[in-house]
Length: 83
Image (cartoon, rainbow, N blue to C red; front, top):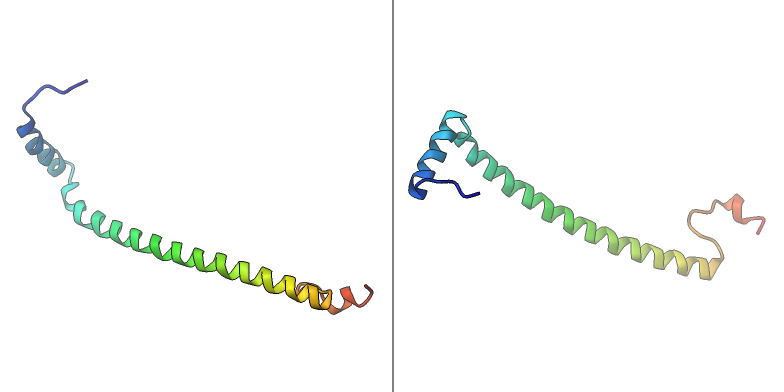
């Protein structure tokens, strides 16, 4: 449903409402926080990507160790002494 009224007055009405409920002063801190959240999201994505690569490399090395020794790194000496 379209609101009736003059679109050029809508901005002034919105600004007036923002001033009444005191949200106009929150715009800058919200934008600043949003930039920080985006930066942290990018950092997280980079770290998750690195983690995935390290996990794949560890799995490859564990498989190679198992192939060569018949043991895995999580096995204690007492666990593979009997096998």
